[in-house]
Image (cartoon, rainbow, N blue to C red; front, side, top):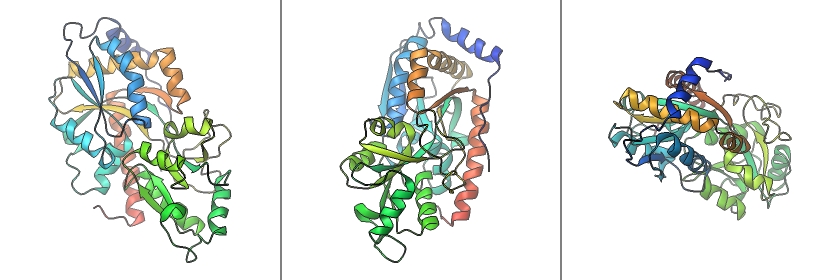
Length: 335
């Protein structure tokens, strides 16, 4: 199992990128820059894209808009990226699911990451989390397990599905869905994953107590956790999160195998000129170095860290290899 460790980017490389972005980049070309997001407005990916849009506009010297193309776990946005002109005007903000996981679980996703995309730069890692709705009495994961069992939700005792046994996940055949299977097996519970088109509608149903639990990224849950409307009861990854210091990891609770950290990054259409790739990477490095932006990303539960294109490509390949083993071991067949 791969362990994600923070890779310090060489000072000379980062300095060069920042210097390249310091001037009026693209001042002679004011075409609108699109940031594709594969999930609905209101979710974690959307919030991150909108936070980055303004500093990227300043660094690129061009208008920047966020374009949501929700559906199929980011598949539609990835297909749109494949179809986009490789001229430096279209970029895809994605996390690992669309790039590394979907091609392993969908027979014909409509794109091949290694062929159709080029990794531009990464900017943060994050963790997924297990959260319960405010309508449940559970204060921790063990409380949730006990609550399910007390209502006849043990294996063979209850019926999966519905509000009781459903655990929301932002996309089908995703890391959260595999985690539901692991938790059901470990605790002998009748649980079923309830896939949504992104985290925003899932959280909406959790807030309305339509489902009792959900799995998503910390950025998805953090604000609702802080205001008490949801409760994050466990996080994935190898360590507790600075934004949620009182929440234990799944490994602490005896559920191992989910220590790898997913990432957020930008991708471009294949054949995008290197000069455009370098310009955008430099702008991104400058954007995440803005103190207010970095602090806000941290408050959302992200660990901010610039990854060059080659570093991102290596990370993407390793993550996909790790999950290929997990998915094969689960017996899941691509659909």
